[in-house]
Image (cartoon, rainbow, N blue to C red; front, top):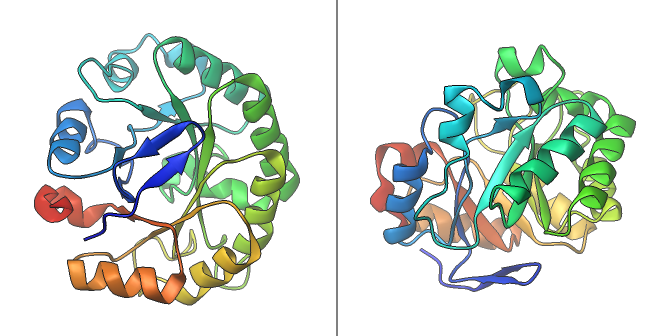
Length: 240
């Protein structure tokens, strides 16, 4: 679908195709499969910033990257800047080469604790979290967001600018609001607007199901890369 090289900090990926982090789906074997089939990067399932849960079986499995090619990107989720910073340091110590911050998950159990896309309602907190994480580690930090909290509150452009100012090195945008979850069509116009307002690489996400759609999304949004989620869950060969 795409063969353009993509760089994050010191790492040059073989192409600009990303496997989206999906809890319960993108475990280590699935990430390895998608990388073998052509994905330039496969981001881990999200790991909580709650230190009390790091020793749980689920967290230990999610933090296992044995045999994965470099660079390894680990996604963290939480709502407290210092806890997120500590989680970033912990995962770097465990072998992460890139830290990805989750501000895109629409799941109620995540948003109810003010994590994931719920954070988009609180722009100052977003900035505090991003700055704390970027300053805590010496590896690249990336971010995934949605276009806003709901259709009356699409603040993706402001969040993107906050991210760039904080030192985020690449931004993935799912073209829906949190309220939309996975309903309706992805907002490629909004992704294009975000791309036009910032200088860091933008990765478009949402409804990319075929090579033809991938090309259309790249052309319409001007994005630097593509992130494949649900389509890869049912067909990991989409990366070929």
